[in-house]
Picture 1 (tube, rainbow, N blue to C red):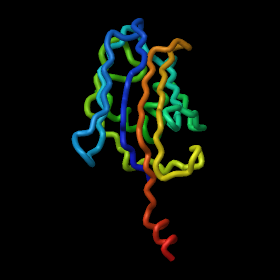
Picture 2: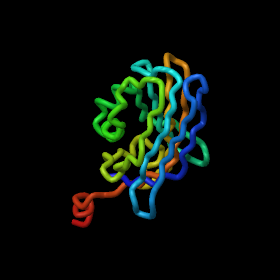
Picture 3: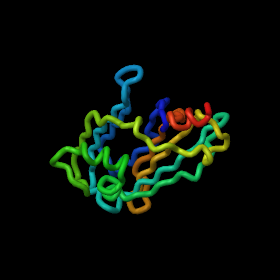
Picture 4: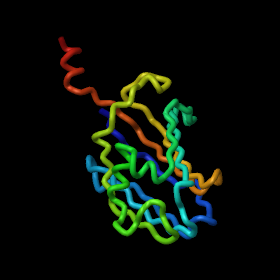
Length: 172
């Protein structure tokens, strides 16, 4: 199991030919409370299966981002309907009048609880130093027919938690 502590979320780039307005926030209501995701997206153009989401995970060491082998690439509609963890979490909270592919207009997603407590355990072998606590950066880039329309970065600390089975084995 892994515990996430979000440090910073920022939108680096928005393509004005695709969006009228974009507002994305990830907030926590208090200490030891879950994170909530909210988004307001005002599309100028039809966004369909040609929208590709690419995600890269970087390990942050000494202020430098070092690329790890964790990389993902999905079309938006496939992600929302077939991804068993994150895609399912977001897909279930889309408004009932919004279907993928998205028509031009406003898509509003309010207060989606991010289930970080159920994250699958990430092996520490992908990181430079095997540690129980690692600072990472997740970079998400959205491309529409190879044209960048959005770039966002999230910095967070990942703390691995040993489950009781591992603790009991070490004590024996």
